[in-house]
Length: 221
Image (tube, rainbow, N blue to C red; front, side):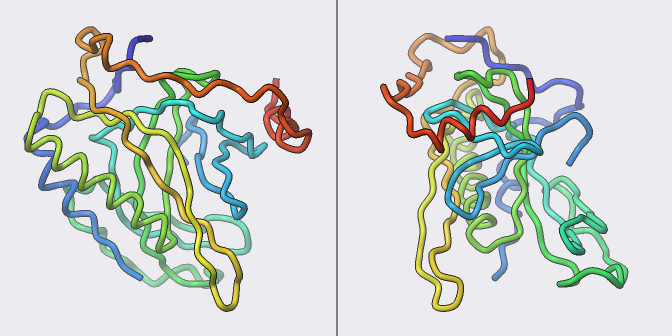
């Protein structure tokens, strides 16, 4: 298997401290140089300003120390203010939302990921969510990591693939929500990832529909 990219740069807390912090993520009804990962309204996972579609079957490692929670205020298509802190800290104190904020402060959760298998290997991305489904997906992932840490703290890093599900809203029609499928947990130390931790990347289809191929081609050279 290709080496797991090290989550470097930060002074990471102990693995034992992860469980309580991850379980503290609250659920209720980007950084410079980091691409934004999201699921669009049609259920496709995309990243970056060009909305490049994530390669089907690619494997991503979630940094278990990167989970954050807080608030965001949106204007018309732009972020007016954002307050995020590590989940080991209490939610930040809020002053009144910016006057132009259309919905005031909204709760937001998120984390960092790095692609470990696929054509986007080594790419780092940030995923945040304010929607009910998105926050639930992050919370579910965080609790799964907390459970894993309590069972085996030597392998706290989940390798995930992306999926989606949907439900029918009476007003807005079909609503897609994200899913993080955990394929395996591995060590933080790239040198200790054994071969049976390797995951097969889904083979590309023989004939890709033209519209879907166009999504990948939109990436800047």
